[in-house]
Length: 319
Image (cartoon, rainbow, N blue to C red):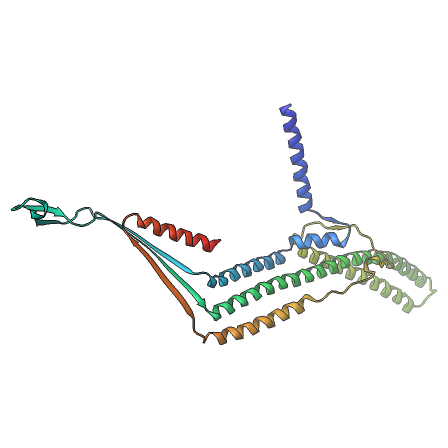
């Protein structure tokens, strides 16, 4: 029974691994939505924008640290291995006329202190944090702009591949017909039925059709290469588009909806950031108000109190 369960788990893991591999290496697409989804997941330039977005969020958190106090602590420990000896009269200890050698001082010395500093008015730092917050929104907006552009380019090259592929098929059919006409024209010219200009015109028409075929093939391969770049795959990666379009197919383009251009949002955010930068420079002339406090305990169990106070303050600020 245990062996059977192991076999079932092995089959399940194999199927799951195959499904993941198939999704990551999908090369057959039946519509434009499928290929746009892959582009949004695998495009390397989009990953760069997402990393820049994460960077801006971290910088914003760093600039917001001005609202937190600065805490520093000191902790020292001293072990006096040998205390100096002092000779004192023995009268104080009930031994008149004698001297007593004693050691004065503490063998162990402890010291702990906490220094707290908090800026309660710093308009320049506050404005800098606002600028960083706008920078995060700019980074997010730029990411959305690139997504918009990526979707447009992916759809453009997707349909460019389909149209050029169809054009190549038509051009090959035209080339077969033009070859037949050219051969028939040459035969008629050899029989003296038509003039030389008509024969040359047929040859020119055949060459124009061949040139059109080469142009369509060039557009097809160039569009396919650009599409692979958007998908983040290599040049040798095979892509197959199964959707078939005809010259009268308008279902994919019915009822188009125009959305707001995301570049406008980026421009507005840059304007807001510039205005905040001007305010920040003006507020640099304003004074800053800070408070400082210091707590110190020396020796004995009081050192534990200082440590506990320090831990409690740090924990409260982190929460």
